Image (cartoon, rainbow, N blue to C red; front, top):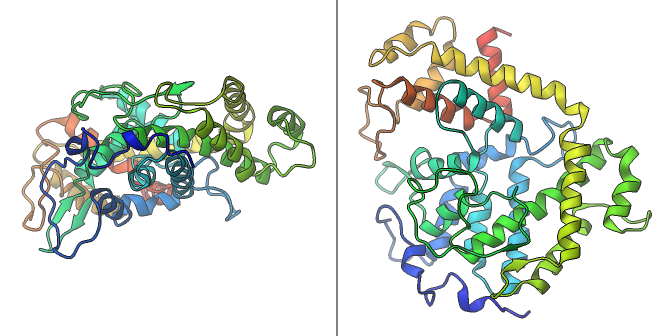
Length: 401
């Protein structure tokens, strides 16, 4: 291995090291703790509930009967494996890439990107800021997810700046032939106001951003083949990949050459990049996926259902707003929507300014119930954390199915 990026790795010798490991609050540390800062982040992520719920969130195909079809948690693990291979070959900090990889989609809504689109539409209709899962992911790790500490108190994850930056900067939907990290140390909450506004702050986060694209392109094709929706397009895919008809078109074979190409062609001077030929192939692969997978007619019925489910949950809870009397209004609706109201009250009581027992909570108040927009943002955040099955269960409770 060349290790040609080792001089810029996120290690204590990096001049930005203190920025990279900066946390919002001091994090307790046991005297016998042998973990690095990024290893502690990795552990805090896999122990939180939002990470666990990824196993029941859609990647592309909704509630497949085939257990081998990719879900969101498998996707983040695929990104973890891909980014580890690349970072290890280039001499970067693999612990950091692993922590970013497993957390990069922690803000994803139920029902995949269609669910994200629906939540964004609800936000726009109600005059709220746009919903995009990268920023929602930062919000979850900063403000929503709670872990119980050694004092039996519930506090937020309090991750390092480098991991938080990797989460909000990971958008892999933009076609870029070369990627380099930015040099500015920005306020991720205040300065980052639109999708893909900045390049990541570290080379490691750049690796994760590219690995995200590499991972989903190949895995989505493998799943689509398993689902049988590419049967009439396989010859075109073989030609695109320049593979003989006898080749096995699985994820490993599709992404293997892409990983090798990236490592060979990347340099500190030119950034993380593919050859022109490979870059064009990736663009054609992405076009192929959109045409024959993501926009396939078999997706349409479930997408209409997703809209019905998410809008009904939002509307049901939104109608319960009554300023500082919202708790009373919610309780008055319990006879009709018992489970929905109970679980929502339990969730929002951790974050609103209505009087509740907060002796065990050490997180900040997020939602002012004097402001209906705060309440609506809370509903959107609550829905975004749901698994596919729980969103459906909630909808069924509302319609008494």
